[in-house]
Length: 412
Image (cartoon, rainbow, N blue to C red):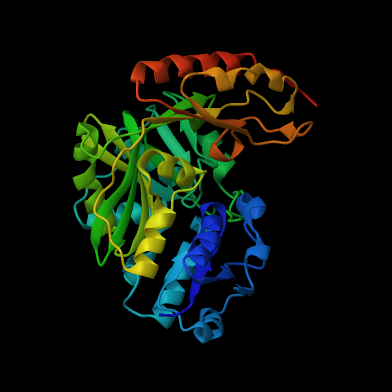
């Protein structure tokens, strides 16, 4: 077996791959999908972690020839921005060993994703992709969605970036033009806009790992999100569930069908699914590890995560079926109500005394201007609570929210 592991865009969560593979006796090789990381991932690019770095300049065949020297037996996407290039490189270097190449766009573009579900009979939300507001209006009228609650977002984005809700009888045109033509946090221009019926229900994160088209669960979480104005998808908390929980049993068959529909056959999968009154409906699915610090909390809750599962499979040939919930964990996302200077960090003094407190990290330096929280990338801080008693978790969670309510942010 090769001594190298090639990681395409080892950014976001993918930054954890180099150390994990090096500890397993493999030398990590970095491939960037551009000459520099996308804006959303700049802070997570650590070139010092690699002796070998390659850059994609537009010629897949030439890049594949550069990488052939490592005699790879697999390649991995580290972040969403590297998924498509990784698929192309696998087909050049190791044809037939990756995910279904004909469905590559369905693993990245939310419109193509929905089309893939339709083609295989998997229930999905109604939606349209267009750059023409007149076409959008005609579609909304034909589907009896004019004046109804809608979601508007780019076809390619991450972490809730530029995802908006339009409330009943709201002005969808304004949000449409707010998204169209803008450059999102992955550095991509939104050449069209996705308009989607609003999914009412409870949202879940379903993390998976697949080997030769056989899918296994890595973890399952219940999301709680909040709205602020027209921004949807602001994360409030995340709770890990046991594999035998009724919610998981209801989600898993649908999620397997989604993975098959978009052609995920090997490696990490990351699906966000809304459980509605009509059953589960996909929000989006990705062929890479979960981001946003999720690997740490997944390991705390289950003793495992996407990174460990990948190394175990690729280096030692180990394939695990399912997961164990070893600790009841609740993650809390601290929300900044506005942009400005966070002046009273002492508001969280004493948080360590909570019975379930495990860890807290404020994501911005002292005296830095913190952004208003509008998505996962702009939360102010993370708090992790772990306890065997659900009531203790609930009580401590409420106490953390009381602390958050006392935050003072001064406008610069």
